[in-house]
Length: 419
Image (cartoon, rainbow, N blue to C red; front, side):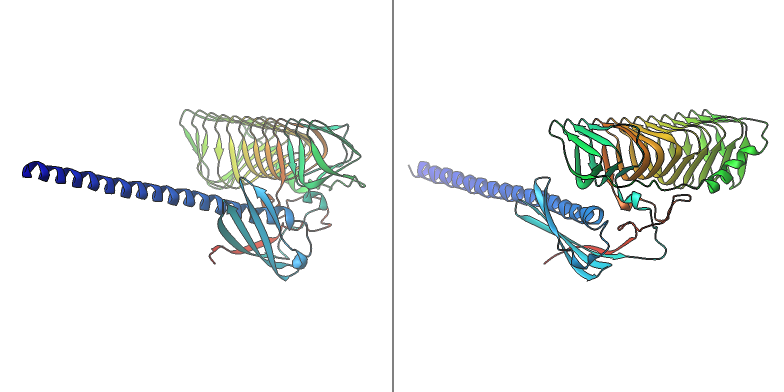
């Protein structure tokens, strides 16, 4: 009997021990879950705080010439909200404090902002718009979830339908017809003034095609071509099938086209292409910084070609066409041509041309100034973002009538604030 009683006591003790271990384990797991969730909410709140700063820079302050009287704002976004407040130092200097809040969890970002003067770009007033069209030929249709974020100036009639939106700005037009859940804040268009364009510096660059060349350049099948900073003249240029271009310099096609395709890679910055005919970039072609194209013909960017950071495309009489996952950062100039973007094209920068059209999930961040606009459709997003415009005004861009606020911002002391 004594042995049985002892066994019973041991059994009860073991049951109690396991129960205690279970309770402790459950508590620890629950505590870990709480910590993980809180960390996630904190990250979301930090992202919202960052978004608040970016919104302040691109929308609330960008066109404001006097920062001394800004009072701040709040916006709901992404399952939470951000609240932005300002501490003005002067008309051109202030401190931004952005509070992100998600499910009671808060994070705070503080930024010092100054509007510099002298060396910064001073753009024509047209470049304070997401999209500016001064001399259109017909009605502009914005449809199928297309969004314009910022001011839109269209010197004609506008029809919006199927969830199209103009937000964080005003649509200036002769008349506006909103259908099927579309909306915009509307105002009457004033007298249009397209910024003038001076092509003289670009004509001088294109004059390189007047040189004499006797052979074509063909680099293909893993072969390479090396430049040493000079100018290289060929009748036409073909780079394809894993071709490798090393070094910096200028390649000129004096008589024909330049064709670059099929995983061609450029190893260095500061490459310039000049063509009598067309320039075609196709099938996973990638470039480094400060890449420039000057052409009499068309410039085509297709099929996952990436042109990143400080690029310049210029055609005097041709068109510029982006299609199928192209990515471009820089300046696009087609003063007499069409600029067409479609199928997941992403452009960050400045666009100036005679005509612009976008469809099928094209995103443009910066400013577009043209005479005429075609349809904007199928989840196109055009966003005015002065921080995407080049620091220096591109050569040839019209009169310097007014400085676009936000184009000359100097940001310092970007940090997270802990109270």
